[in-house]
Amino acid sequence: MAEQTIIGYEPFFDVRLLVFPEFAHAAPIHDSVESLRRDLAIEVPNEHIRAYERICSKYGCWIQTGTFLEACPGREDVLFNTTVLVGPSGIESIYRKVNPWIPWEVHASPHDLDPHGDHFPVADTEIGRIGTAICYDWLFPEAIRQLVFNGAEILCRVSAYMDPWGSTPPMDWWTMINRTRALENTACVVASNQGATMANYPPFSWPGSSMIVDHDGRVLAQAEAGPGERVVVAPIDLAGLRAERERRLGHDTRSHLRTEAYSYLNEQRFPPTQSHPISVESLRERILSSRGGDQG
Image (cartoon, rainbow, N blue to C red):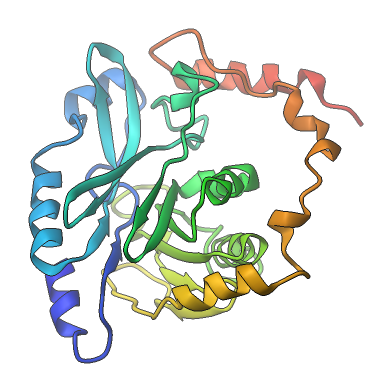
């Protein structure tokens, strides 16, 4: 798909960044870490990454991979949901999902193992500074804002975002969140989503609707909603984005952020786990426990 897209669109677009959806390599329809590790887990890097490296080297492009269920060396009780940014020179960054879709996703967050670590890498490339977060991460504005404060200009969303929270009003969370994260961070969003029928993953279906959004929240291109493979292509005006970040005094929420005013981030809500492997039951208990400090 990457080679066909680069070659097929060459007369019209210089395709340099390609983004694939979450679980393009493995879908976590399992109820335990043990079964995920047995059936799907793989270490990173791996032979798939090496195949991406060959394409990137040949065409001078960057590929944000679909996610892997990543085995953690020396820890049979820990798995991560992981995507890799690969460029012409090899691996540029590795991102592990900080906010799994709980309680159903039983893989770990890097926050569980290193609560105060820097889990939001940004790659400084010749096509821009690229940051990535996975699917449910995007419902946490703090996660995307951290990528931006780490220097990201282009935000990749690698997703398997299911119905009914797709691109169809009135529950069009997919489109709404992608546009909001772009405009509130003055950043371009490249969002790739699975398009799959309920027959493959009951009871869920995935609406696709992959899209590219500019730094003002305008949709530059969007795939038709529905199952099946689609390619959506649009130009990213990196020079324009940088110029607007430099020029603007109004609506520049990054420079307007009154950090001291938001004390809620100083209060622990969902703590890192001390117990592995993670299970659906243990996640439910942690969710209920984290509600103890709710007011109102």
